[in-house]
Amino acid sequence: MKITVFGTRGIPNVLGGVETHCQYLYPLIVDKGIEVTVLARSPYVNYRVSDYKGVKTKALWAPKKTALEAIVHSIYAAVETLFDGSDVVHVHAIGPGLVIPLLRLMGKKVVFTHHGADYQREKWGWLAKKVLKLGERLAINYATEVIVISKVIQDQVRQSYRRDDTHLIHNGVASKAHYSEDEIDIVMSQYALSSRGYIVAVGRFVEEKGFHDLIEAYSRSNLTLPFSFNRRC
Image (cartoon, rainbow, N blue to C red; front, side, top):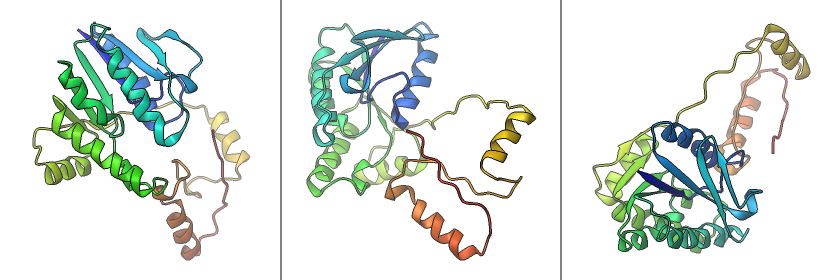
């Protein structure tokens, strides 16, 4: 079996939740004897054609402009699948979901993974939100199989689109890293932390992640824990 993948900026080591998901998922699928090709977006990777842990990777051109990037790349990727001999196309996220009807017209079997309702994010204007909502509708209605990563999304798909055959597959995590006591002490000392004397929040620094709510809750708590902001790009 041969699977072609798009809807991700690319792998490996490209910042993003979908990208991390793909980086860990597809080598495991390759280990089962399945050929996988990930179609990356050219602005985010430094290769034209490459390989990552047995996963074939290929960069296709995409404009690095938020409103156009996903759909333009997805159209190129859909056309690419006409000539690559793929048995299944795996599409990630609702923006790229816009081209799923086109893939079905081409005779492709399509697996769609719904990672979240992107149209609820504050960064999108009203038109972009309408387009993303359309992408969700087309993806849910036309994909051969639909994967959802949470019970919340599964319930929303069932209620909004009457699709009851989705597959709930939670995102996995990498094996827990083990650190020596000395390594732990160095990090704790670096940020002036004590055991059980701190609060950790990890995520993208955007409004929908609710960091402002956490900060407000902290300010009301009368706690005197140390505060540190560490931005990793």
